[in-house]
Length: 299
Image (cartoon, rainbow, N blue to C red; front, side, top):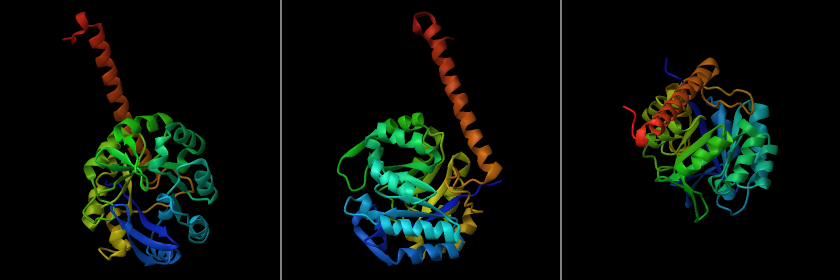
């Protein structure tokens, strides 16, 4: 049975308006109107989760915190959907404010990972209520709104795994808003290296892209953020949901924004079992090499 893919329609907010960016560049913003209205429209079309991002906070040029807090409370209390808060959460003050909004999940900005000690502390304190954004150019983590690079993805990911990160939001920045398809190779690689589920972000342009991402649900890519394609009419949210399968709101703070019930638990257990066997095999191989005469391979 094909597992469902949780969809998170994106509502990016800049200067109080709903906008979309191309390749994560602030200067490319196109306005799409009232963000509260956008959320209501997505809810009416069947959304169970909303990806809500503060673009001004992400680029360090202000904040839409009061408006986002209002949207979170309206969406979760009145409409019964869950909200993922994103954008500019890179220090204690912004984290606590986002958590206080009541959002079901808060994404730590890629820039926050420059201080892995603090990021690990946030993960330890808030558990499944926080996720880590991995905004990637090539294999380098590139924080939006900042010129400095955070580090190589494959150097930072093990530290997040050690901290117990509950979820990763993976964006190929070169594809974000570009409408040229998701980077499925990158998503597969991160899902294979991580014990936590992955949210795909960036590049979705067609229903076939949705189907392709759904095909990755079994390996740990259980959710996808969809933005520009919806706003530009490439397909409707109802059509996307038909391609993605059953949508699951779950309780606030739930660790699964994609795989529902027993299917999600079984998939996660299967992935962890495979990784444990791989780690065990590697350890046994290392021990055999160490015990062989002269450190050579044991035949």
